[in-house]
Length: 83
Image (tube, rainbow, N blue to C red):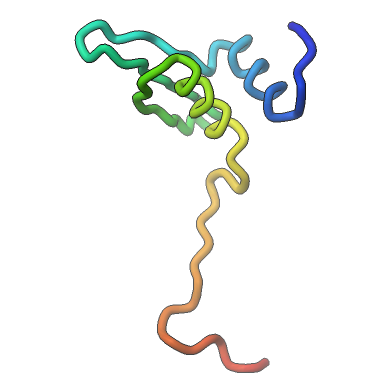
C-alpha cells in the first residue's frame, strides 16, 4: 500500500485492500453502487453519480464516529431534574 494523506484515507485504503469496500458501475442505472462491510458484519451501501463521490461515501462510512451505538436524548420540553 502507499502512503495516505491522513488517518481517514488510511482506513479507506485498508478496507479496499481487504476487499471490504467496493465501487461498481451499474450500466442499467448509469450510476455507481458503493458498498462497505465493516466489523461485526455491519454493511453500508448506496448510489452515487460519479466514482469520486462513491469513494467519498465509502470513506465517510468507514470513518463514522460511534459506529453501532445509539444515543437517546430525553423526551419532552424539559431536561432531566438536577441530581
